[in-house]
Image (cartoon, rainbow, N blue to C red; front, side, top):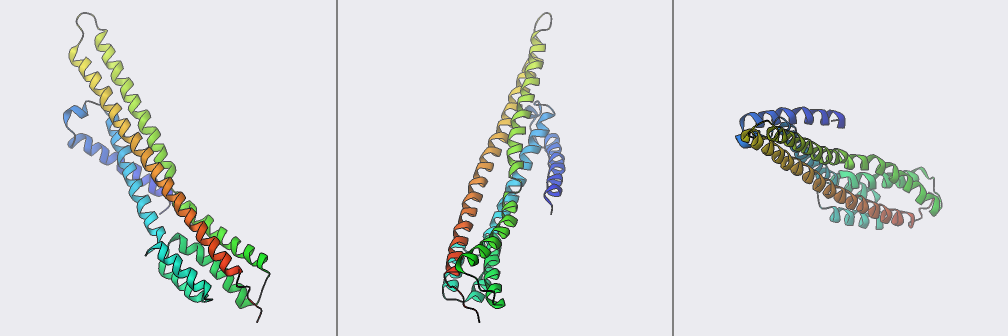
Length: 244
């Protein structure tokens, strides 16, 4: 599914569920926060949806089994000269790291089979280029929707602040009326302000924590891919295949 389509579906469903929760599931004192509470609920739902989607994507990118074991098996196969076994391990593992390594292994195999033997420097550059192209295809998939997390954090805080300001305006209007202040309207205004403040903080803090968590996780994952790729490149280049 395209990112734009996924985001559109999530936004629409989030506001629908937000309205349903606001109308039928929330206690009355939270409803006093006003219609902006629907937006805050929708933002929290969107954040949860993106977190689940990113978690499943990263789990899929990691592959079917332990990444450490997979890298060890590929390295052993390459060191023993069994490129087909290394490719089979990539096919079995799947995931982003396996796809990147497979690109380098296939390039090496094609060079050997076609007899287009090059020097060590040229061979490394050719394999590195293939790996970089594969990496450029995988990394955007890993980083997809991260901007949506940071946007939710920013918008959540701003919506909460907007609700706070509206609530305070209502409170001051109640205080500024001639005669005795309207205690009911004053209480409603303060309640609206505080409820929106709390909702905005929940969305903002949740978005920031989720964004930083996934950025760190993705950075570590891409670093592991780079290290594994470099190790495989060195092993392949040091074999110095001879022309048949």
